[in-house]
Image (tube, rainbow, N blue to C red; front, side, top):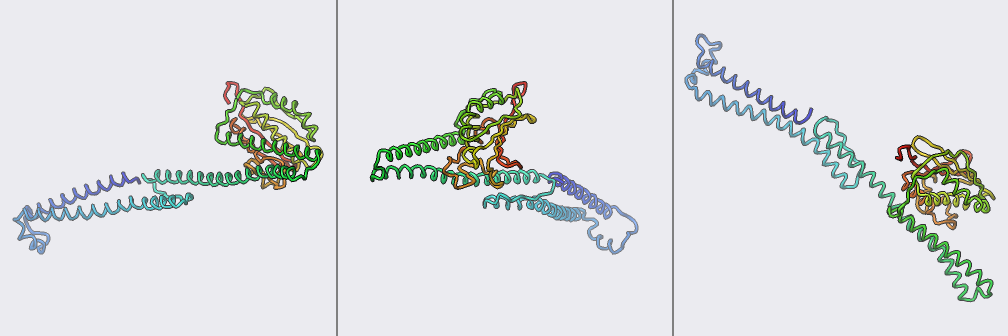
Length: 372
């Protein structure tokens, strides 16, 4: 029962009690003043007889009794209503205290169906959002620490190599022209690595801050992907990757930035080539329409990763094998994820039973009315 309804019935009870008391006093007065004949109780009449002719005193006593009775009843119901109002405030007060202590998992278990129920539900909803925000903030903080550590590592490695080469030239270790050329070529490659890391880091930061504009256009996903693959097939074939296209549907359109989509696919190809353990790695590219999305699948038969690492592949600077730290910036798949998200889609990794690693890109289809 709601508090408003309880107050209503409390007031009704007080009014009915007041009316009954007035009727009772009136009847007693009439009995004392107007009753004739033999009384029902001689002892009662003996008590009342001295006041029979003093009507004023009778009314004063009646009113006093009425006031005392109403006060007692009012205090009783006021106390009951106060308890009903104060009782829900106690868990609310405790909830505020728990939130102030950063205990965002605290919930109020309030079952009464009154005005406090929406307040308690709103508090629980707020606590759930704060808990989600706290977990996300902790995860972002951990990712930020990993990011700083990754940046430090990936920048320090080529810089250390360049410094060593410079010291070799300066101290005369590279004493012949051939050795100097080899040292200079090595420093040039390491400088290119540094440039690539900085470019990747710059792109990552722009995407992370949502400051990198994408040129989204209506794109035939099949035609775009096939063109990208045909233009790069010869290069990757020479590097030990055999690319096969299977099951690509026709006339499937998405909103995409073709250049950035190409960067995503190239990043995935590069990972397969870098981490292959055999002379040749096969990459199967396929697509399928599913509900209102198109699923682009890129599956290789490489070494894959451990099942526990699949969900972390798209974290910044995450590598499943520390020994691979020399083979990339650790930002490639993270950038892929952010690009696909900016296109309104999602990207995830799966481990097929046949081995290897499958990257699945999901993009929303453009319907016939032009809406995604």
